[in-house]
Image (cartoon, rainbow, N blue to C red):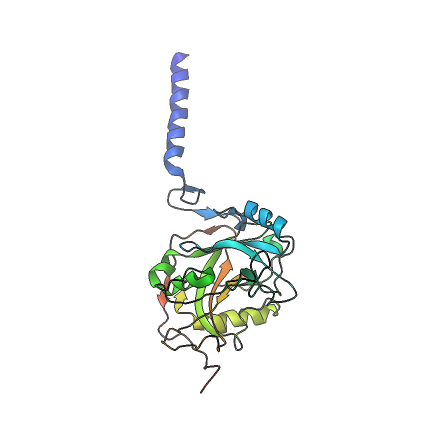
Length: 282
């Protein structure tokens, strides 16, 4: 009897040791088996911003989410005035005048109850950038550090950005770092027909990206677009800000169910990204 008891205990301990060696928490807190890390739902983001969103919603009913870009100081609330895209242009979260503004979503955005299933096809978030020169003293204001993606090493180390709504903590995979004339490329639109939005993404945005990402776009993907100012284009052209329609953007797509989470982005350099004509020719 004692022999059988020892045998049972030995089997149990061996099983526990095997599980301990193969199952371990990854750096994002999700358990990994071996080297494979999977995410079964967009709600399994390693970052939970539900409390921040709830707290800010009590202070300002225009609160729609929270934006976090790893490796930058971009970690803040997002608001939306659904009637006027200019309302928050030079206002802060308290709706007081502030030259630096606040992160705000395009008025045509759809958030529904906050569940990802009710989110619009393309959520565009605006924010100011005072410069695109990393050594400038005000580079770190608002969306300035989005220009970090123009650095190849940073782009590879940052495959995902995180925008969460009231109901979901969401993960978005970057697939374009682009420059576009906003009057020629409607990258900020959520009210386009599905086929037209897909055409804008595949035929207008991606060809303008400075990287060719190894990311497969599906017809039913949902997109997140971050839009800000640009002062110098990749070819060295001065945009003559503020007398310009050029904008700098990051576009990402919602991570789908059961996708592996990557440790780094995979892409090649786009040696000839499409450049729009100067909107203010001499």
